[in-house]
Length: 191
Image 1 (tube, rainbow, N blue to C red):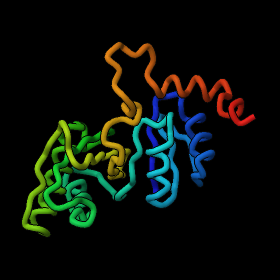
Image 2 (cartoon, rainbow, N blue to C red; image 1 turned 90 degrees about the vertical axis):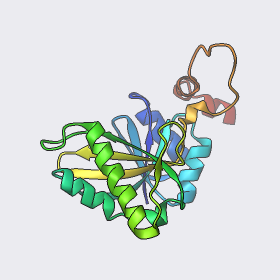
Image 3 (cartoon, rainbow, N blue to C red; image 1 turned 120 degrees about the vertical axis):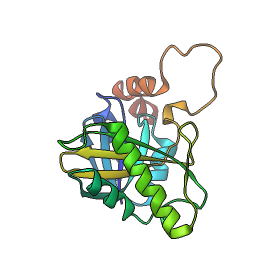
Image 4 (tube, rainbow, N blue to C red; image 1 turned 45 degrees about the horizontal axis):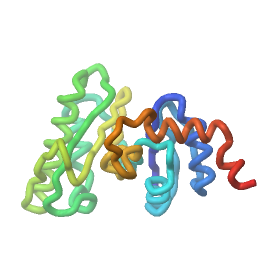
């Protein structure tokens, strides 16, 4: 399976190193994310142990997408009834545009319609939308004439893990982890 670990820009190389240290194979830093391949257990390991990743996304499908009909058809072809639990709530987001699809809200809406229509046709139950606390977050990434569908495996950003302090945090935990990684903290602890 193919996955992406998203991160703030500038975190890509340290995140790639962190993933390799976690035993993840086929790691490739990109802009604002690191791609990797593996099994579901590898993605679980990243969700549990990465201190630099913001989110972990599983690639569900890739398909040609020139216009709204291609988008609808591509999303509809995904066997959502096997991906999502019956009665799940969803939230769909989108990034990227092309010559025909220039509005990310419309892209997300069209993808959501296809997903919900597929579930209604296959299970008789249309998914409900919950933009605040959905059971599943689906991301549509459009680049040129290609679309990628991703399932967010993290829910909230990973840097929200841990106890919530009442006082304002002076530094986000993932930024603090980056500072420690760049300072060679893991190597110093192992010595």
